[in-house]
Image (cartoon, rainbow, N blue to C red):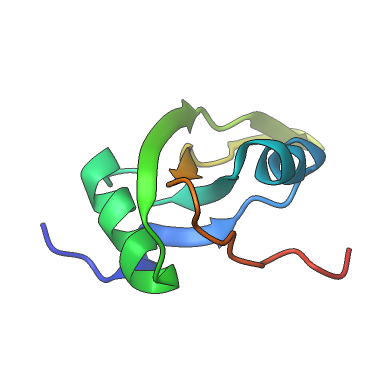
Length: 98
């Protein structure tokens, strides 16, 4: 399955934990396509941001059940990827003015 880089990388995860990992461990956090593999994520980040990736860790989050009045719904499941850059690489900037 061949996907474009921005079909695999949905958006950066900009949370307190995500920004802390970015600063201390040279690791970027992205929401990615649920069916994407670690190899596809690695190649997509390398092509999109022109950096070398050392390691990719992933986690699947199950959608929460939410209620609005009497009706109940389910948020979709999603996948998070922790992308560690190779030593000497410059971290891409996606959360500057927060």
